[in-house]
Image (cartoon, rainbow, N blue to C red; front, side, top):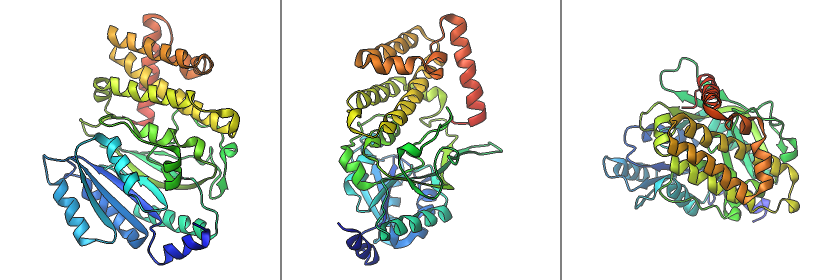
Length: 355
């Protein structure tokens, strides 16, 4: 579709500028806050409420009620439980918007920033300069925290301009490009062949990571868009929950290693490789740290195993990641080394507030 056709379709409301998928699983207590934060975007937005087999509460009923009240904006999709990743997949398959965003049902958007983002996306489309990835800030909205940590990228990305991977500067160890601050062009997700595994937590990292090689143009708006709620005891990023689900974290980590190993970087922008290495370095750190925090012999064995898996897949990748600062810190030898690694994690956790 040409830029002129896109502009005409958007003006005629036959094509939404943005699809937002909301994966919901027994989300009655908080999903309406998320939905309400999006509705002011009106006919520019398509809201897909993906009910992932909810059965304990009124999630399905609430989704249907919003569809009935806002039939041109909201669609309720009911499916057999497949986990967060399958809900995201369903959203991708059903999306009609030019751009695609995921907002978890316990999170929400800043409505004013959402409207500003939609204005910019429309402006880019109408100018014939669409982008593959649109980025904004997200907030660690931690329950009870007096000061909310804002994850901004004004020192890492050019602000309010189209750029490519070569313009991405150094990101801090605590900075992530995550599902929270990413809006992908829908075609990029289709071209990348993204299909998240069913019944697996932490797949948001795959969602962010796999399409990177298909992204040629980016845009960053320095505005606090996504409120990432942290505070429920059963939340997937709760430390003890993460340790209990460590095998799923390892599964995601291995999939990301596989994705990286399968890339032919000789045929793409070399800066993509650098950014993907940075991301994989952080995921190796998260996996290793959770295994160290648990302190069990079995999990220490699993930590050695994930690094062995990396080495088997690619010795070059292993050497690159094993001797970064993070790679060194999570592999300090002996009992004292493990204590120092966990202490370092506790300091970062205190100042960032990510779980």
